[in-house]
Image (cartoon, rainbow, N blue to C red; front, side, top):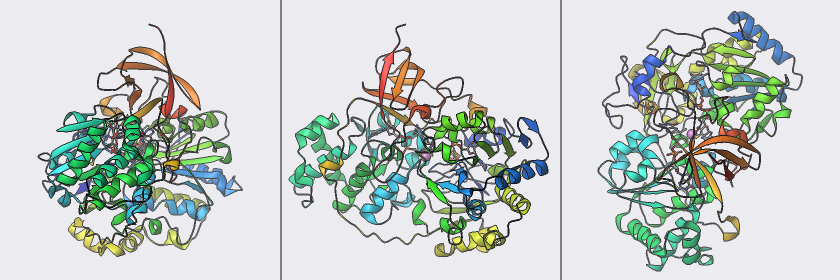
Length: 572
Ligand SMILES: Nc1nc2c(c(=O)[nH]1)N[C@H]1C(S)=C(S)[C@@H](COP(=O)(O)OP(=O)(O)OC[C@H]3O[C@@H](n4cnc5c(=O)[nH]c(N)nc54)[C@H](O)[C@@H]3O)O[C@H]1N2
Ligand SMILES: Nc1nc2c(c(=O)[nH]1)N[C@H]1C(S)=C(S)[C@@H](COP(=O)(O)OP(=O)(O)OC[C@H]3O[C@@H](n4cnc5c(=O)[nH]c(N)nc54)[C@H](O)[C@@H]3O)O[C@H]1N2
Ligand code: SF4
Ligand SMILES: [Mo]
């Protein structure tokens, strides 16, 4: 049995021949990446350890990494950047223990969904929402800032026969394939949600809420770009059909994102809709991620926001990366490139594939893929916990092997590292009622979450909100890639910026830089909106849009990536 470990709602589960299981909600199918995984596994791999472009033995590489670490007196100048390239408990979480024992700095893991998790927790005390089984109970669904038809294909499939409404800033694939859609201005979702509440109040479907009187629907109509009638239509749709609302992650990275998500999530509660929203269930299973990372016994010396790594790059001498591709995925990631070229930062990367970040690293360690190692995998949507067993011969080394070798070389003894990874996993699962023994025996078990909601009804004061204006860049998932992964099968992810009117080259300028890019006209995009597939490269030199994304953050600290841009088209 093996589960796909990529950062994806679906967490497909496969048999040992890599056939997707025919169990709900996987239902025997997978995506364009899933069907190519076995083939991809032998392409573009990092085959051996490398120091400054030269092949070395594993022993030499580990010795060199230990020397580099020992050479940094103030360990807070060592930063590890890791994200969700592989969601396995042994691959992503447990390895942080070594870095915490050393006293290195870490990130706040905010890039994807922190803003939304925190926002929903403000309302419900937890961000846990509907389960796959709950999806089936609804007759209608609202996809709000979510490209589910592409980013969440198993969720989309089980909702196939439901009446679908999409709220987006462009005619997304999800909007196009829905029964109804509303195209609003980027960053205006919180106003739309408040507009819906205003009509629900007017039509006596809900009680009054503090601050609601401070808004009026004609302003809301002007800010969102849709008519009062349409807002009322949506409010009626909500009160009459009691839909499930899928709240997309992209909202959290937009203007007013935290307030938008908390207000949207409140609508189902006020209408008495049970299990009425879904964002991400990751924090509701009771898996003790902090324990896996060893935070009970050792803490990072510093936590840096994922929005600010570029700004704060001078605070670091060594950056260790695994499970992420930060020069493409993080705002200011290009600063890492600059500092490595200047010799001011030593970059060490552990990755199975030649990511853009691995390509510029001083030291590279080949990692085993999820098809080649044991792990425990959870989903941020469905209830299955899976014991992954390798189905292909191993290349490279696992994250556990890496930290074992390195801690030995550094002569570190610490109870966090003496506790075996399996014992740590076992303890981290105690609240789920699942043991490692049971999991290894059954291979796949269901977690039954114990959730209590502790609801606080609140909507933002108008002073907290910014009225969006100007041109916005927006992003979405591409069907053939997961973030920057899969170019070995589907080709380099070189991007164009889709827009309403112009074809050719031009400049995009933000408060932190300027890029020359290619634009493509697309009649599915309204004016004022500029769309690019997320984590793609905008130039052949491998420059990502993130090189000009400033370090702004939302209300709860999540990076604000859907920002205002200045656009200058070049005459053809
Ligand atoms: N195929 C594939 N699937 C993936 C991924 C992938 O890379 N490829 N990535 C995975 C990951 S890491 C994530 S986080 C999820 C992301 O999954 P989603 O949460 O679905 O986010 P996106 O796919 O980015 O789509 C967001 C939609 O929001 C719209 N949007 C942007 N700004 C606004 C706004 O201000 N208001 C409104 N209403 N809409 C807005 C965009 O036009 C887009 O259609 O998908 C996961 N699934
Ligand atoms: N401007 C802008 N920036 C964005 C976004 C956006 O919408 N706009 N989206 C954001 C989102 S939603 C996310 S989630 C992030 C994603 O950002 P990243 O986490 O950087 O995502 P990937 O590009 O998929 O990089 C994952 C890396 O992990 C590696 N990997 C895979 N499996 C393993 C393994 O088993 N072991 C090790 N050691 N490595 C492994 C892969 O080969 C790959 O190089 O990007 C964010 N960045
Ligand atoms: S990327 Fe998502 S849909 Fe594709 S195989 Fe992995 S879990 Fe399934
Ligand atoms: Mo993400």
